[in-house]
Length: 281
Image (cartoon, rainbow, N blue to C red; front, side, top):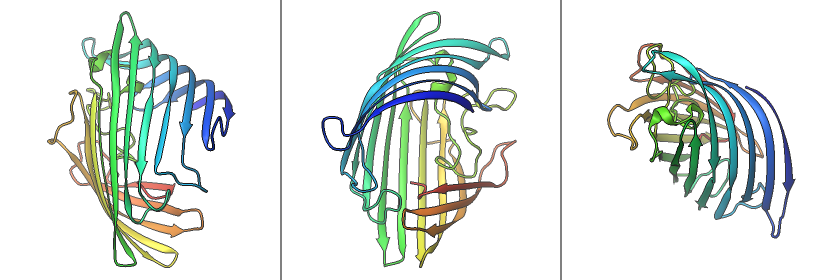
């Protein structure tokens, strides 16, 4: 992915830790799922947690104006074609956080809801909404083990998948999704084996975080998928499992996870490696 952007940012706008941003940018994204040339103008007002002050309640809302030319698989023609989409969106989110740490929670829970009413123009005006809800919980077992779990579900009502820009669809797989599978690899595929995305998604994760000194070991299991239907299904889940290592620093843990798919499809890799800062969720 390549791009250039400029951002105007005002911190403490009217109150402490409220931020106003205005961003304009152009970028080129090249994934297995789609190739896109995109121009974006967006504004956002947010009230966020900071490393010095973790808040129980945070929010963000704003607007997006997007013009994007993307590759999309045309099932009627049996090939990938390019299409231009003009999108207007009003994204918003709220989060309730009762965990004890931003990067390394050991107890408590988090709830997050994201809703984005949008309208896409490609020959006709098509209104729809992107919705996503996520919950995670952390339960200490003794002084050295934390059981952590996460669920996530999303839906895009109001529009057919093939009328939706590929960059606005849901995809599963990757270090922040279902580990063991490649980035955006979960969900419907075209006849060439490339992801085409869906209108809904569900994900589940369970970890046992064992810490000894500045180090830790984390066995985990993930599940989930993306679907063409407007609501996610309980069937056809893809599972991944693995083990991770943690090195704890003053600002948070360094994370290395190794995972494998438990019920892979043809073409899925056997092992995936993920490196990041902070816990997986």
